[in-house]
Image 1: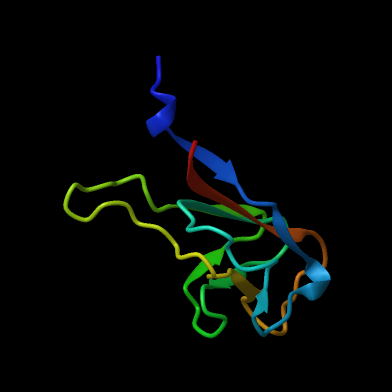
Image 2: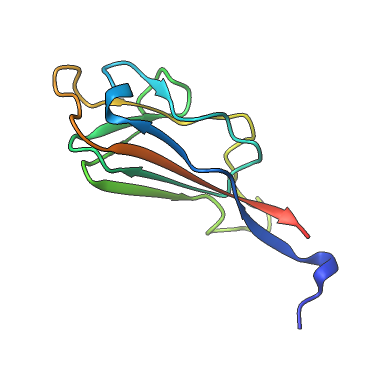
Length: 119
């Protein structure tokens, strides 16, 4: 039996997305900034081209292959000394085409955000 007064629950923010037609050779924000510190972020690329991912809209931080996904599980390796990693509230995911002359022609990119909440 769990102790409800000290339980932490996984919560989901609304799904964010951008259509292929909104993806170009420059970064575009996908949805709105995080409402809470993110513990898990999934970037799903259902377009037919590779995309680059940024957390500041300027620098390339990662790549997600066409019809692929990447899962950022910040809290999977908790340490007693360091605590949990989280992507800060107010941050945002940005995406762009890997090459400006090779833009997606179908699909969308989706961002799933999971955060922790006290019950």
